[in-house]
Image (tube, rainbow, N blue to C red; front, side):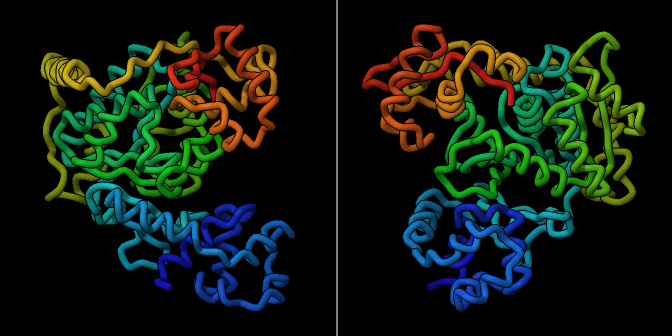
Amino acid sequence: MSALRYWIWLTTRHDLGPAGVLGVLEHFITPERAYYADPEEYDFLPLPAAAKRSLLDKGTDRAEEILADCERLGVRIMTLQDADYPGRLRQIADPPVILYIRGRSFHFDEEAAIGVVGAREATAYGTLYAERFGMELAAGGALVVSGIAEGIDCHAVKGALKGGGPVVSVLAGGVDVPFPREHRYLYEDVAAAGALISEHPPGTPHKGSHFSQRNRIISGLSLGVLAVECRKKSGTMLTMNHAMEQDRDIFAVPGPLDAPLSEGTNYLIQQGAKLVTCGGDILSEYWARFPRRLAASAPLTPEAAQARLDSLAQDREEKRRTDPALEEVPSREFIPRSGQRERFTDDELSLLNALEDRTLSPDQLVELTQIPAKRVLSALTMLQIQGALEERPGRRYISLMRLEE
């Protein structure tokens, strides 16, 4: 059995989690030693009983499937003990033990990597400056690191692509699972120009709990992190907290004092984040450190930036018109966290979360949510009555709601 199989076996144990995997490695040093250890040795691990029991399962069928998927998809696997594992990421408190990478290889420790993050329900102001900062950073030689979901992340990625530079998107699911589904073209663009990275194997759906774990990787790979637009209590602020704990540079775009989605960035500036108005404000912090990689150039004029963004929009529209396989995705109603439990039951929320980025059949929903079939069918009926989802041909359902995480 190759060494990678042991790494995949260890990281796919149920009830173990990232912290548990690191605990196992601290004790056994390598996954192979953990695999062949006597069951009594697991008693010495500071883990819950369920996590210890998961180590008794020596089946490797799932590891074999993941290796085959990676070979088919052209996905590279990097482990914590590989020589080219990013040193910046290894130094954080809880580094991912394994990374699945689709696209180009980067020597992150030699890159002026800047994380760009922000709200999903972004305003026009936020999306404009996310694209502009992404474009100016990439054009100036920085490696833009972000997510790829709707809102600030995807606009920062689009801007970086238009700026002609590389870009890395860190995902909360498999590198082969577009989220949301309508971003499938953007996934391909990022894989071609940069890289898609995840600590989850191919085929893994994007789950709410994965996003908070994903955020530490965005900041961990970066020298500094830029918050474009966010609320004071949000996933973006959690990312900025990770960045501060990891001793990264903190940047923020100021916003109107009465704008809810500028509360977070304005607060960061109050707390000492550098106020920035263009990509050059960030790049200037690293020119001396990366003189050959970064261009000390003036930021794009508003006219030039808008011309590039308009061109990007035209390219996307052309792709949409020429690809008959692109399925029409309905507009979705945004449901804030505070109003979700007032409107939906626990079963209904579980189904909506599972359906957030794809269409699924009732059987697939039963398998994903582990909710009994009778309750799944009942919840589907109630969600249809409420206008929260839509049935497609083949008894597949698509959500018409977008739930705040």
